[in-house]
Image (cartoon, rainbow, N blue to C red; front, side):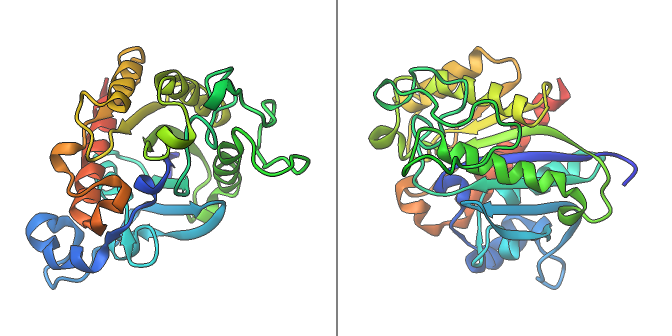
Length: 286
């Protein structure tokens, strides 16, 4: 604990939330992901990686990293592959801090504060853009552009203010990177055409809100999308313009469609998590 905890923020929608079946995973772990279990087949628990998860602002997980219950309800998301990859490579304590919920669009619910005219129907962010500890605005009637951004970022900020509650004995931290896996809600609720611009706004605002100017950013395409899909292309366009950002192309390692939560196939979540973790390590090593 002499080194600051390296914190990685995970955001998005149901892809990031995670619906992989932990029971199915346990049956194949020894062959395909042997680092997840011991020689007797019991789940390994990493005491150097903390798994913290807020589901729509409510704490769901605060424990050491294990695939038994990665995202709650005996389900896993990409945090297991990401956390194990980063924990193995980084010579410091690691915290995976996931804050998200399903059915949210970057161009609407998650619209970042600096977004101007790039949301759904030309909307701009409607929250409190000056807030240093974001809260859902009490004086807003109903939903507003950026409400989920305010909620997801706000609870993550609050958790880091109480660091030792979420990483025992920790005294200092550094937000080293951001992970983003989202897109299913974008065609109906958001703005696909401006997705690359909104990713850039998102990255810049997250760096500001978490005081992390040197943090890296990794996003993943949807499992059923080819590289030629419009949403995929927008992600790659964004990454080409950001030296500290990378895209993980998930179709080759995904089974089933993202809209159906990949049929709860744990391998999809594990494979994408490992791929995103590797991409982050490569960014950090530059």
